[in-house]
Image 1 (spheres, chains in turn green, purple):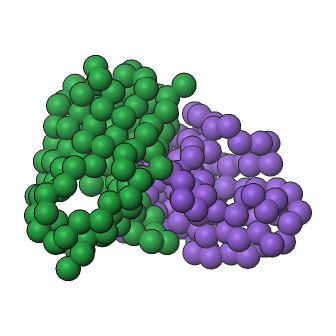
Image 2 (tube, one colour):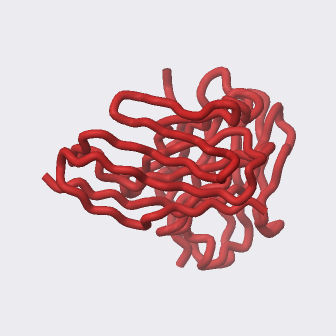
Length: 110
Length: 114
Protein backbone atom coordinates (compact mmCIF):
# COMPACT_ATOMS: atom_id res chain seq x y z
CA UNK A 1 0.00 0.00 0.00
CA UNK A 2 1.43 3.33 -1.06
CA UNK A 3 2.05 5.87 1.68
CA UNK A 4 3.28 9.42 1.09
CA UNK A 5 4.93 11.49 3.80
CA UNK A 6 5.89 15.16 3.73
CA UNK A 7 8.41 16.80 6.00
CA UNK A 8 8.31 19.34 7.52
CA UNK A 9 4.61 19.81 8.25
CA UNK A 10 5.11 23.56 8.52
CA UNK A 11 7.87 25.96 7.61
CA UNK A 12 8.37 29.68 8.13
CA UNK A 13 11.17 31.49 6.29
CA UNK A 14 12.19 35.11 5.61
CA UNK A 15 11.64 36.48 2.13
CA UNK A 16 14.44 35.75 -0.32
CA UNK A 17 15.50 32.47 1.23
CA UNK A 18 15.94 29.32 -0.86
CA UNK A 19 14.10 26.32 0.57
CA UNK A 20 13.52 22.62 0.06
CA UNK A 21 10.35 20.67 0.72
CA UNK A 22 10.60 16.91 1.09
CA UNK A 23 8.31 14.11 0.00
CA UNK A 24 8.82 10.38 0.51
CA UNK A 25 6.81 7.44 -0.78
CA UNK A 26 6.92 3.76 0.12
CA UNK A 27 6.20 2.07 -3.24
CA UNK A 28 8.61 2.93 -6.05
CA UNK A 29 6.23 1.57 -8.73
CA UNK A 30 4.74 4.95 -9.56
CA UNK A 31 3.73 6.49 -12.86
CA UNK A 32 4.25 10.12 -11.87
CA UNK A 33 5.07 12.35 -8.96
CA UNK A 34 3.17 15.62 -8.98
CA UNK A 35 3.58 18.70 -6.81
CA UNK A 36 0.61 20.94 -6.07
CA UNK A 37 -0.01 24.21 -4.33
CA UNK A 38 -3.16 24.85 -2.30
CA UNK A 39 -4.24 28.23 -1.01
CA UNK A 40 -6.60 28.30 2.00
CA UNK A 41 -10.09 27.09 1.11
CA UNK A 42 -9.16 26.59 -2.53
CA UNK A 43 -8.53 23.73 -4.90
CA UNK A 44 -5.15 22.40 -5.93
CA UNK A 45 -2.95 24.05 -8.54
CA UNK A 46 -0.50 21.81 -10.35
CA UNK A 47 3.09 23.06 -10.12
CA UNK A 48 5.25 20.34 -11.60
CA UNK A 49 4.81 16.78 -12.82
CA UNK A 50 7.73 14.36 -13.01
CA UNK A 51 7.21 11.21 -15.01
CA UNK A 52 8.64 7.99 -13.61
CA UNK A 53 11.41 8.00 -16.27
CA UNK A 54 12.51 11.54 -15.44
CA UNK A 55 14.81 12.84 -12.72
CA UNK A 56 13.70 16.45 -12.46
CA UNK A 57 11.48 19.20 -13.81
CA UNK A 58 11.87 22.97 -13.62
CA UNK A 59 9.42 25.83 -13.90
CA UNK A 60 10.62 29.34 -13.13
CA UNK A 61 11.85 29.44 -9.53
CA UNK A 62 10.67 25.89 -8.88
CA UNK A 63 12.67 22.70 -9.36
CA UNK A 64 11.40 19.25 -8.48
CA UNK A 65 13.51 16.11 -8.38
CA UNK A 66 12.57 12.45 -8.24
CA UNK A 67 14.61 9.49 -6.99
CA UNK A 68 12.43 6.41 -7.37
CA UNK A 69 15.01 4.02 -5.94
CA UNK A 70 15.07 5.84 -2.62
CA UNK A 71 11.38 6.81 -2.72
CA UNK A 72 12.06 10.53 -2.46
CA UNK A 73 11.14 13.74 -4.20
CA UNK A 74 12.11 17.30 -3.34
CA UNK A 75 10.65 20.65 -4.35
CA UNK A 76 13.21 23.45 -4.39
CA UNK A 77 11.91 27.02 -4.28
CA UNK A 78 14.45 29.71 -5.09
CA UNK A 79 14.31 33.27 -3.78
CA UNK A 80 11.07 32.78 -1.87
CA UNK A 81 8.41 35.51 -1.89
CA UNK A 82 5.42 36.23 0.40
CA UNK A 83 3.16 35.16 -2.49
CA UNK A 84 4.64 31.66 -2.20
CA UNK A 85 2.87 31.24 1.14
CA UNK A 86 0.54 28.25 0.76
CA UNK A 87 0.33 24.53 1.47
CA UNK A 88 2.42 22.38 -0.85
CA UNK A 89 1.27 18.83 -1.52
CA UNK A 90 3.04 16.01 -3.30
CA UNK A 91 1.19 13.08 -4.81
CA UNK A 92 2.38 9.75 -6.22
CA UNK A 93 0.31 8.13 -8.94
CA UNK A 94 -0.67 4.51 -9.29
CA UNK A 95 -2.73 2.98 -12.06
CA UNK A 96 -5.78 5.21 -11.68
CA UNK A 97 -5.31 7.34 -8.61
CA UNK A 98 -2.96 9.66 -6.81
CA UNK A 99 -1.91 9.16 -3.18
CA UNK A 100 -1.31 12.48 -1.45
CA UNK A 101 0.85 13.50 1.43
CA UNK A 102 -0.57 15.72 4.17
CA UNK A 103 1.32 18.74 2.87
CA UNK A 104 3.85 21.31 4.05
CA UNK A 105 2.38 24.62 5.15
CA UNK A 106 4.80 27.34 4.03
CA UNK A 107 4.83 30.91 5.28
CA UNK A 108 7.23 33.41 3.71
CA UNK A 109 7.71 36.48 5.89
CA UNK A 110 8.14 39.90 4.27
CA UNK B 1 -10.16 27.83 -21.82
CA UNK B 2 -12.27 27.16 -18.76
CA UNK B 3 -10.74 25.03 -16.05
CA UNK B 4 -12.50 22.35 -14.05
CA UNK B 5 -15.73 23.79 -12.67
CA UNK B 6 -17.59 22.48 -9.65
CA UNK B 7 -20.97 23.33 -8.21
CA UNK B 8 -22.14 24.30 -5.73
CA UNK B 9 -19.19 25.99 -4.00
CA UNK B 10 -20.66 25.58 -0.54
CA UNK B 11 -23.37 23.34 0.86
CA UNK B 12 -24.86 22.80 4.30
CA UNK B 13 -26.79 19.59 4.93
CA UNK B 14 -28.25 17.78 7.93
CA UNK B 15 -27.28 14.29 9.02
CA UNK B 16 -29.19 11.63 7.11
CA UNK B 17 -29.78 13.79 4.04
CA UNK B 18 -28.48 13.15 0.55
CA UNK B 19 -26.27 15.44 -1.54
CA UNK B 20 -25.25 15.68 -5.21
CA UNK B 21 -22.10 17.46 -6.27
CA UNK B 22 -21.37 18.37 -9.89
CA UNK B 23 -18.23 18.68 -11.96
CA UNK B 24 -17.44 19.80 -15.50
CA UNK B 25 -13.99 18.78 -16.77
CA UNK B 26 -11.66 20.76 -18.96
CA UNK B 27 -12.72 20.56 -22.60
CA UNK B 28 -11.17 17.48 -24.19
CA UNK B 29 -10.58 15.70 -20.90
CA UNK B 30 -12.42 12.40 -20.71
CA UNK B 31 -11.20 11.28 -17.30
CA UNK B 32 -12.73 12.64 -14.10
CA UNK B 33 -11.69 11.81 -10.55
CA UNK B 34 -13.20 12.70 -7.18
CA UNK B 35 -11.26 13.30 -3.98
CA UNK B 36 -12.29 14.10 -0.41
CA UNK B 37 -10.13 16.45 1.63
CA UNK B 38 -10.73 16.69 5.35
CA UNK B 39 -9.31 19.79 7.04
CA UNK B 40 -5.58 19.47 7.64
CA UNK B 41 -5.21 16.32 5.54
CA UNK B 42 -4.26 15.53 1.97
CA UNK B 43 -6.98 14.61 -0.53
CA UNK B 44 -8.23 11.01 -0.42
CA UNK B 45 -9.23 9.25 -3.65
CA UNK B 46 -12.92 8.36 -4.02
CA UNK B 47 -13.59 7.49 -7.68
CA UNK B 48 -12.16 7.68 -11.16
CA UNK B 49 -14.36 7.62 -14.26
CA UNK B 50 -13.26 7.35 -17.86
CA UNK B 51 -15.56 7.11 -20.85
CA UNK B 52 -18.55 6.88 -18.49
CA UNK B 53 -17.21 3.78 -16.75
CA UNK B 54 -15.88 3.49 -13.22
CA UNK B 55 -12.17 2.68 -13.48
CA UNK B 56 -11.23 2.92 -9.84
CA UNK B 57 -12.77 3.24 -6.41
CA UNK B 58 -11.19 4.24 -3.12
CA UNK B 59 -11.90 2.98 0.36
CA UNK B 60 -15.26 4.69 0.83
CA UNK B 61 -18.60 3.16 1.86
CA UNK B 62 -21.39 2.36 -0.59
CA UNK B 63 -23.12 5.56 0.48
CA UNK B 64 -20.79 7.23 -2.01
CA UNK B 65 -21.61 6.82 -5.69
CA UNK B 66 -20.81 8.66 -8.88
CA UNK B 67 -21.51 8.69 -12.56
CA UNK B 68 -20.16 10.27 -15.72
CA UNK B 69 -22.34 11.62 -18.50
CA UNK B 70 -21.86 11.51 -22.30
CA UNK B 71 -20.44 15.06 -22.21
CA UNK B 72 -17.88 13.79 -19.61
CA UNK B 73 -19.30 15.85 -16.77
CA UNK B 74 -19.75 13.97 -13.53
CA UNK B 75 -21.83 13.83 -10.39
CA UNK B 76 -20.88 12.58 -6.94
CA UNK B 77 -23.74 11.44 -4.71
CA UNK B 78 -23.53 10.84 -1.00
CA UNK B 79 -26.47 9.27 0.83
CA UNK B 80 -27.29 9.15 4.55
CA UNK B 81 -24.85 11.93 5.38
CA UNK B 82 -22.75 11.65 8.52
CA UNK B 83 -20.97 14.41 10.40
CA UNK B 84 -17.69 12.89 9.25
CA UNK B 85 -18.61 13.54 5.61
CA UNK B 86 -17.94 17.24 6.20
CA UNK B 87 -15.03 18.02 3.89
CA UNK B 88 -13.87 19.73 0.73
CA UNK B 89 -14.82 17.58 -2.25
CA UNK B 90 -12.48 18.02 -5.18
CA UNK B 91 -13.00 17.05 -8.77
CA UNK B 92 -10.06 16.61 -11.13
CA UNK B 93 -9.83 15.96 -14.83
CA UNK B 94 -7.05 14.73 -17.06
CA UNK B 95 -6.31 13.29 -20.44
CA UNK B 96 -6.57 9.48 -20.55
CA UNK B 97 -4.03 7.50 -18.56
CA UNK B 98 -1.95 8.79 -15.69
CA UNK B 99 1.54 8.37 -17.16
CA UNK B 100 2.68 11.88 -17.92
CA UNK B 101 -0.80 13.32 -17.48
CA UNK B 102 -1.24 16.36 -15.28
CA UNK B 103 -4.19 16.23 -12.92
CA UNK B 104 -6.20 19.48 -13.01
CA UNK B 105 -8.39 20.28 -10.02
CA UNK B 106 -11.43 22.47 -9.57
CA UNK B 107 -11.90 24.74 -6.55
CA UNK B 108 -14.01 22.16 -4.80
CA UNK B 109 -17.34 22.00 -3.00
CA UNK B 110 -17.23 22.67 0.73
CA UNK B 111 -19.78 20.36 2.37
CA UNK B 112 -20.79 20.93 5.96
CA UNK B 113 -22.98 18.33 7.67
CA UNK B 114 -24.72 19.44 10.86
